Amino acid sequence: MEDKDTVLHIATRKGLFRYEQRASSWDLAGTAFLGENLSLVHVDPRDGAVYAALDTGHFGPKLHRSEDGGQTFEEIGLPAYPAMPEGWEEMPQFDGKPITWNLRMIWSFAHGGDDQPGRLWIGSIPGGLFRSDDRGATWQLVESLWMSERRKGWFGGGADAPGIHSICVDPRNSEHVVLGVSCGGVWRTQDDGETWEQKAHGMRAEYCPPEQAYEPWTQDPHCVVQCRDEPTTFWAQHHNGIFVSTNDLESWEEIEGVQPSVFGFPVAVHPQDGKRAWFVPAQKDQHRIPKDARVVVTRTKDGGKSFDVLDRGLPAPPAYDLVYRHALDIDASGERLAFGSTTGSLWATTDGGESWTTLSTHLPPVYAVRFADR
Amino acid sequence: MIRYVVQVSFTPNLGVHVDVTPLDVDGRTVREALEAVFRARPRMRGYVLDDQGRLRAHVNVFVSGQMIRDRDLQSDAIDASTSLWVFQALSGG
Image (cartoon, rainbow over all chains, first blue to last red; front, side, top):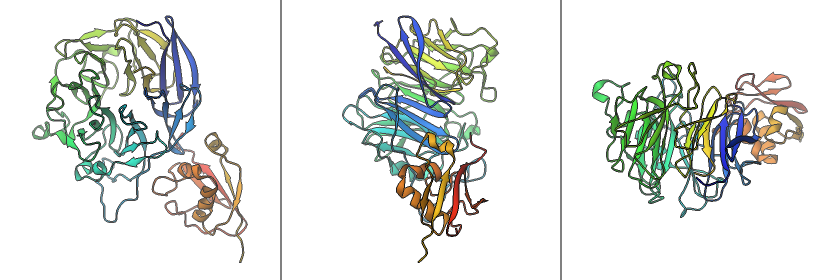
């Protein structure tokens, strides 16, 4: 492994934290937005910019960018929904009210390909996808998706309103973009957002009546990732299972029987080897705590045929840490991973998960973890 | 023609994000006064109003000590030489 500093950005309920690893020691190197609620942090490897998405309780979502690796930030443009056309109707959500066209939360963030300088993507709650071509100064709603009748069928999962939580820009072709939607399946464009198709075929929804269980439009993938060097492989941590696609989203295959649980939020895939993926399971959907109060990481190295349960360096039971969908990350080498929990714990590994180091057990609730080098 | 002078003040908590120095603006309704504020400080708009121009759920506006009634359009009339306060609600933190 190269002997260079590893930088890790942690977005939490009460601020942004930056850890750096020097030699074998992890140190808290800096903080930003202390006291503020952050929904995401993202690093654009094309120019090193760090983006921080705030979800201020009183004053709404905001977006900031750092040009110096996360030490100082400047507020930049924010996506906004247009006025709703006359006569347009939204579907009532679980609370009986239709969604309003307001940016509730920045829920996913991605950068475009090397051939698209300045291109950024934001996925939001209540479901709008936004595109910028000027590094976030201005944003445009992707109307082809937002105005489609199928989008109106999306419904809330963990949040009251639906949202886009995963954006995969295809390393083979930057105009190919895949979205994970809770709840609304997996969507793909192959023409830079002009048209969209549903790609959740093969996913199974336990929360639907049996005859609708394989209906792709109602699937709730919690997190979708694409392998960088084997880009026909995608992994999904779904609401009721683990799914993999090895045929470029022609179909998904369910991986059953993974112990201790197939429920969880995040998934990470090795950037070079699509057969290797990591999960942080929780007991089940109505019990979102680690099974037997034991925090573990599950890892497959063979495409889901077998799984290792990794816990060396993780806390002895009882521990009740829950890990959200953006709070597990893997770096460009594929050897370093880190994850943070809603109880403010943070762990990292430099050997693919064989052993873990505790960085903190006293952070605010962790929402997103991102390596600078990814 | 009477020039309406509305002094607009802000919760200091907003000062973490934007300039909250009080300022005098002209306006016959709360919205007109707010629009005058936003012309002077464009970034303030997104902190006070949502995408559709409604008062944010956790923001309150008071006119001469009274909370405004029309949170959607802020059409509440204001008198000349009054004060307008932009506060945060108790909820939302």
